[in-house]
Image 1 (tube, rainbow, N blue to C red):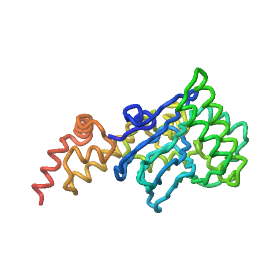
Image 2: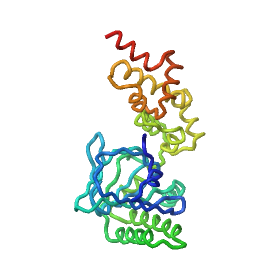
Image 3: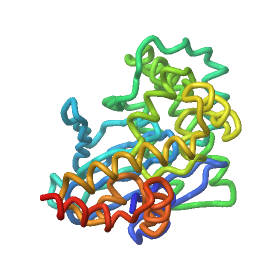
Image 4: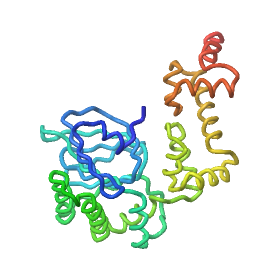
Length: 288
């Protein structure tokens, strides 16, 4: 099952969570190295690396963030590895920022329209001003008070403003301006890149920076079909290819094609092809 963050942090003992208005601040500690892990970051986020290194794996190659770095992450699915480098633990501070706050900030700044498809993370080496704000956030998490939620929201604003005062301000502006790019080109890119992720329609809409109703309208305009029907059929076509040409079992193929509920996958497959996935595999075995 695809874990969704920051929601999944609620079930991890070594994470300290605090609301910052509608945003979420999470202080994450990990004392072992679990290997590569895939997760869905449901909010646009800033990640301060406190200890260790974070490796982010992409087809183009790995990106590595070290202690003292700040990572800007667009919402999406990431394959990552956290490494312990000093024999103690890995620690990071995540600012999972609410869309309303981000939209308001971008609007006030007057960030330009994106010139490029800025989907990869940004890694910025923190200067003293950012480190001081980071440390004050950690202090509020360690010693909360009656106004911690509002203070943390102000700290998120402060981090964003400092990023726009720093050496990487133009790169940051370009990155921020792309967060809510709902152009037809970007919607198509998001659908193609995440077709086999187990996203709900609401999650696809959020990825595209649209409300659910706007997403459905725009999708129908682009693909001449309702999104749920089109996405299901594309997943089932891929599943059929895997059933006929791979050695994976039905459960594995269902997950690989974006179906977290195997019973639902079997039902949808039977409706489209008139047979069950298991029978499709038996037909393959009979042929060979």
